[in-house]
Image 1: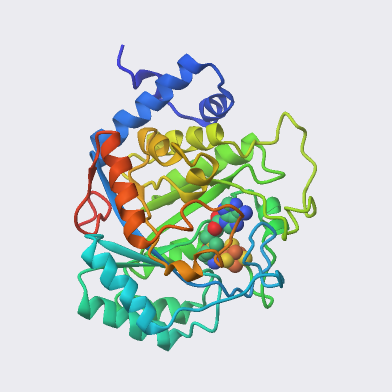
Image 2 (image 1 turned 120 degrees about the vertical axis):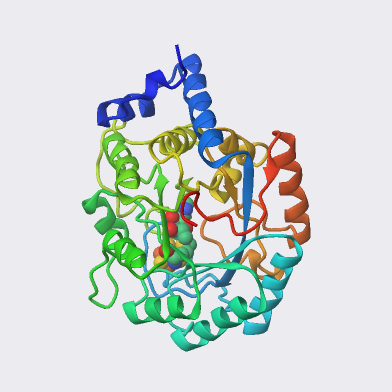
Length: 355
Ligand code: SAM
Ligand code: SF4
């Protein structure tokens, strides 16, 4: 029997059964299937996308995130143009094909300022440029695309509308519809990426199964899946803003549940780029990155943010890799990738079949 026979029909019931599966032998067959689909569709190369956390200012009040506007205990920073260009040149020197500029939803990052930096990155380097800057107005997205940005990452966090509304308040009276925004990003010519957190308080197994089916429906370039990690200076971290679900229905924010979600996502979206996330590396610092890569993932995002700012980008506590220099981060990831018999990808690492 082919190892993929068990996975030929991944309907909602089958996804739910796999999310609840605990038998180690059955789970081994899930990892094996995800790894074989990964190999057949995106190959053995692991693409490195250099992460530059360009600002920790944020106007939003997401109930889960340490960067939320009213976390007054956090010292904020915003990189200068020179600092961003220095990180980007480091990315080129290290052979990374892409830089990801990520930040809180920070309107101190003006449309024109960032458009000029994107223009410089495209003119002065061969890098693909990914943005992850929250729910910016349409005119900003248009301008940045025209300046040359290639991709945009915006996690929809959960496909359950009630849970999303509870943990992600609207801002300035604007509706927050990240799924609609992902469709708009594609229309504008971006390669859209998204993702969810696993184990948000109030998230049920049915919610998570629907998240994975939503990935399939959206046909995404990149899909980031990490465990929800509690931050004490947030409403969710303080046990507030939660909805009642039974303990049997609540998805655990565990390493194992994250691997299941990653592996099932690979089976549902064979050609998408799936990172082995920093959140996963945070809950298993010894082997989380490698196990993610062995269970469906094909991307890692080494951190290029200048070390003096790293600890200030505190989405959740005890984040992996905050003390390493960019050089140490690169060497460590190269070693981890080689240790599992994989190779480091060259070039921008765009989605297979998308030119
Ligand atoms: N501000 C942008 C946004 O929200 O899309 C980008 C930066 S935001 C920090 C990036 C991602 O961090 C979010 O999409 C969310 O999934 C993740 N994140 C935030 N708080 C988290 C937490 N407590 N545990 C795990 N992931 C978290
Ligand atoms: Fe801001 Fe993004 Fe954190 Fe929400 S998840 S508070 S938008 S940085």
